Amino acid sequence: MKRNIGEMIKGARKRANMTQGELGSLIGVTAPAICELEAGNRSSSPNPDDMVQIADAVHDVKLMQDYCESCPLRKRIIIRKFKPLNNILPGAHVSTLKVCQKMSEASEKLSVMVPKMLRKGFEADPDFREHRNETIIAILDAKRGTEILIDQLLEQGLLNSDELQVLVEMQQHLCEAKGHHVPESAA
Image 1 (cartoon, rainbow, N blue to C red):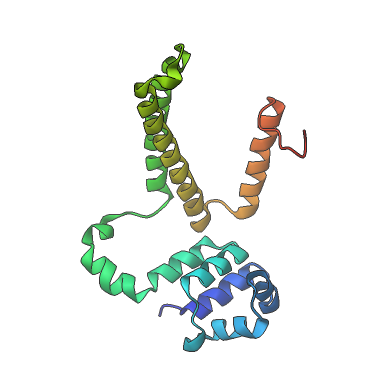
Image 2: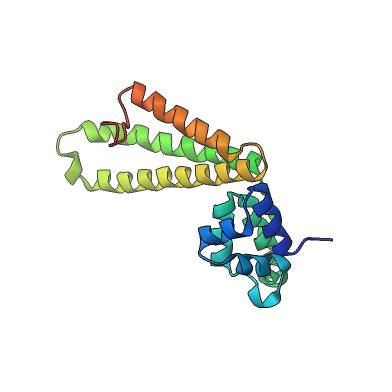
């Protein structure tokens, strides 16, 4: 039997080693309000904004996925009405392939943009502006794909938030060692 949203919230809170009061203070509600949510009281059912806050507070991306999967609109309308959505395969393996493709596309566009930028007066060239816009869109698409991949790695337990923090710090140290991206506080 599938757990209800209250049970999911309680489980995520306990995995985060938080009391009801601690979670409540992080999202701006009282401990009794959290108790009501966890009890599955229909009158206190969380809205999507509350669920985002709760998932962020307990650092549990899967909580949002479970919440979305329990949505009656998704079950009754979206999945039936938009059948192509059923063919979307979730998971880090699919996202990894998509990120590789998106980064490759962005790299190709950047490779074309560099010679254009080396020409005198390139800023005024409409061809440059059009290519610049396409390149930035490709870069943003790769960035969004990367963010989704990291969320899925966290969700699937292939990476945890502590490991991610260590990797972020390692990447920052590498950048600083090369003289790049030094935070303002370190400058």
